[in-house]
Image (cartoon, rainbow, N blue to C red; front, side, top):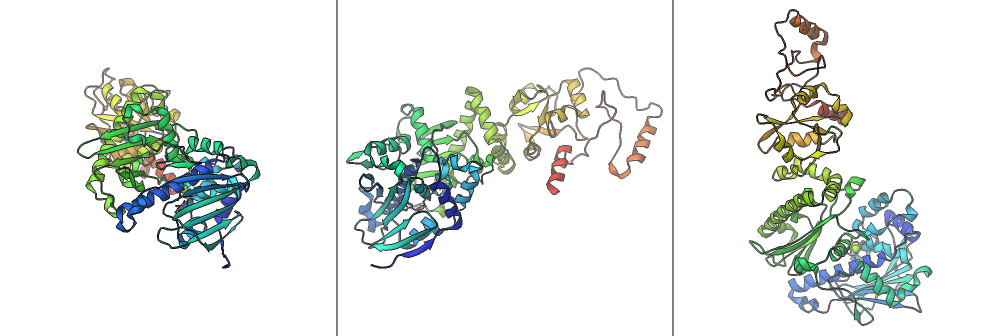
Length: 546
Ligand code: ADP
Ligand code: MG
């Protein structure tokens, strides 16, 4: 027998393993979901190879996952006849490749780590390691479809692992968990069935326990829309997003026949992880061609400002062998993407009317990503902007917000622009002397308190043909007054003398001092030179440069 090769885990993985091994997290059986998900991925990859490479054609049949509990030895086996791993893949994938996800995951847990919710682990690309929540020893026996013998990986999760060659007759991978004492009942079939039904119902390959197939292999996206229940959608979402117990905020089920045939389900999470300080969301949609997974995490199917959606697209008009490189300028993909974007906009507009609470949550969570979209995505900026909501002078308490469209509908007949004013918060905005004349003339002003809002307005420039204008700009052209304010007598003796005094006192610090027609109560106000940055924007830029 050959001596096993010894390896050390990457430091961040050792740290992660320590946390997992000592976790008091309640739903530790989500580790099984992760192993089943990996098995399913390996089967998808095998099927893909079989369908695109003559030499492996037979491998497309009989793909399955098996769960087997062994009472006597307290072992739980998750077995697949998927793609398997070579020696080098084993070393890299299970221990030595840098996985930024593990650090991000640890960071996301914050304080109170021992009790933290660990169900999100799979999202960070380190799901395999969750095995150590259940097991004190893990053995992986695998044989790649390209190899003529197998390899065994073993670890007790304390910093090191070893690998040795083994005899393995069949292709695929077996993960053997030597269960900890307190979870040993997971070797029982009834427990395993429960776990699969809770967490892995929608795995698109048969999962057998004993001789019985225990999951729903029929994909929900090919069912008629009306036949899929919200409960089924929730479970499918949990499967895609590696989440437990969470319903999506909204979903979209699409069946399109022309010009391109495709079906799609899309899910919006309830929370925006980016907002909680996680890294940028990098998952994409799964892309399938006639039920076969062609690519997971495909980023080309949605524009950046919708990157938080989970889901899949299954098309009959797509060849199996689209490569990552050709996806970008693939006409089919482009058309699917256009159709998806349009459907999402329609869905969101419907959500705004049908379920204002959900729409508000959506805005709170994903508003920042949408705003980024207005700035960066020229093609969609106006449509995105119409989804945004702002406080306005219509309700100075800030409770009632408004869309740009609603603002337009209330605009005075001869009003030339959409007006806004930015500030650090509502009370600061309300105090601005620049608002006086707008209040008096009943002209609505949007109140922008999010630092990015003014950049959004500046990028947008116009909305539905109307200019967007900050009211602290010098060149604000107000609609003609309803009630005539007494004309300021410019000829009034001594007033030009006042202006002179101001000019000499302020010197270079201002571009110009001039008489104003917009003030009613306050004696003076500061405005910005035409074409310059608004006051709030200057404030933000100053802070950024500090
Ligand atoms: P992720 O699945 O997000 O990539 P995991 O930690 O769950 O992260 O798995 C790490 C990697 O190990 C996988 O990407 C895959 O390459 C490999 N792997 C894990 N389980 C299997 C399996 N059953 N068959 C083949 N490869 C596997
Ligand atoms: Mg995984």
